Length: 239
Length: 317
Image 1 (spheres, rainbow over the protein chains, first blue to last red):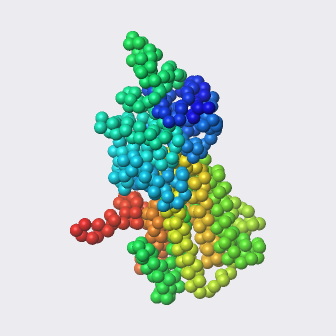
Image 2 (tube, helix red, strand yellow):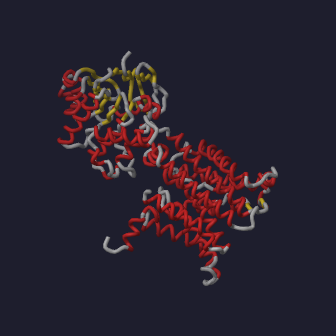
Image 3 (cartoon, each protein chain N blue to C red):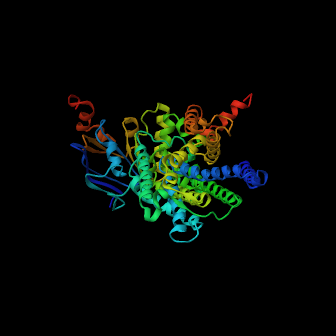
């Protein structure tokens, strides 16, 4: 039994097959990369995992149990956290309040929630911004807040959706460091990313998709040299 | 003792002593109504201001509470005061029914659905004559001739509502309500059962509004569907109280209630008899102007924009 398994999932929006028969398994403690060109269905897979959309077909297993049909909030309680590619800060709340709200997923009193939130903020190096309004954060801060908030729900599996997009070089290194720190804490990570520097340097294994279908899976080196992957990214003549 | 607690204590003391300083029944009556609006405005604010579910139908809960008390007296022959206990529960029950149906909708669609709910309840109360006496209305005999008991009851209800709302907003519930308002999808992904917590917010809101309705029945001793299920005297008024005072602030609706009752009475009485009579027809117009003014210059209401207002009057800041 693997820690997390996606089995032959598919999703169609009307006539469009956004995801078509994708399967992969993730082992506990690894960083699993999910890559593919724009519109290939990466975010849709995340949306299927945390039931933002219902599955058209297939099944998803977390620690051996099917999570198909569970509600988004139940999946979070089960231990699967996620961040959004288009960040969703709770704007008219402070950074601390954002994280407190998510910490209530695991504790019930304000005191405990504040304690958990402060710890998580410190872990993610965001403590200095705790009293700022979430709306006032620049993009790097917002991406970091997304991670902090998801982490405060104490997930065992964390889905990171393009947390490095839009960051400058220095911020990128910090993001990579943070992701590795989270993994070292024992959180399994599935990461969707366009920036190859990030995904190639931190992933244990990578799963590549195009047009909603699997084209390759393996170590970063294997995937980077895979003809179909190169073709998908650069076109046929480069393959 | 914190400064906010001290302020609350002073405000409470002023209100407790008020009827011993101002003995006029007329002014007492106005303050009683304002205190009742503190409860309704605060309830609306919990659902709309904090949870982001804008209701145009709070008359439903107010009317249900009022009719619960009225029907207790006329049909069951027991004191309408029992309505103060049960009015909250019937209001909350109707709240759940409406939540069950209307929370499938988001944003403006939810707001529209609550308008419809208000009209449905007004028509039910108008036409179900065997239960509600229809347009004839329900008349009971007031228990007290003095206004004092009503005053203190309204004060207790207002204080209790503010205390409960404050407590709720400092708890898990409060954080969840605001999260849902800010982004329902993000809230769901953080483990928040949005449907459940929206219903809890509505439940608390409807409970206090129902109690206020039952109080109204006992105090005014007469209700009819056009008054207690009124879209603009109750539902819209609840919104105005919230917006003028300050949406998503604990004290906003309390301040808003006094301002709205003050403005309403000033114009209804044609500036206390000093202005020509036609002015008395104009209070709705004045409400409109007031809302435009508040939205343009203090979008967060009087309490929400208090620091801004203070800066206007205090030099050198």
